[in-house]
Image (cartoon, rainbow, N blue to C red; front, side):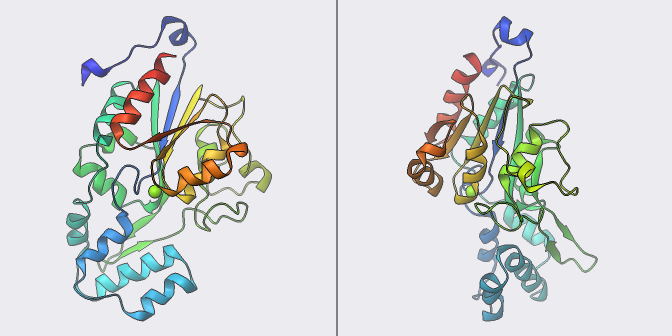
Length: 271
Ligand SMILES: [Mg+2]
């Protein structure tokens, strides 16, 4: 992919132009929902008491109950790992990520996702893409206990943002990635700080947020006029952005494949 490398113009290189490309994961990098993909490991429907967890407690608790169910059926985490490696990528996304990775001197890549800290690395590693995101995967923590049961917990407890889920406000995470002295996730911040859009203090000349769903709407609204939201065609985010166009400051680019995003990003790097 060496030939894909784009050299920044001399003037922009001189002032260290930097770009952040922050990705959602499910239906953005992978062409499926990595959470529900594990259900195809089961031959029988989930017991009703597990289905109830979803409505009564929420999605993260529901996923944790599913991991408990798989464990009770004797399905090992090695089997889950092997199964998850089959989650397919969106067409052209591998090529897009490889392109970004050859332009590391100006581009940082991050993931901000409501999936989890086991599935994302397992899937990326299977496609030799894990190192594109070294140190920049922000998602719900997941782990395997001594009995070989998988667990998941909230990324943080969102009490400030009505647009986002209880367990992750992607806008707050995006903001933290863009400021060197921003609060860490385990340090409580004032709600007004967590709700701020990006501004002049941002580390990046341009931020690109790539997503498809409802929980990608909050980070999209944080972006500045020089930034871009790459919204997947025919998914919910596009409709939300259209319906609320007056709230969106960033450029909106809709895409069907990773190749579309690759071409658009080349023009952004060159400008
Ligand atoms: Mg998604």
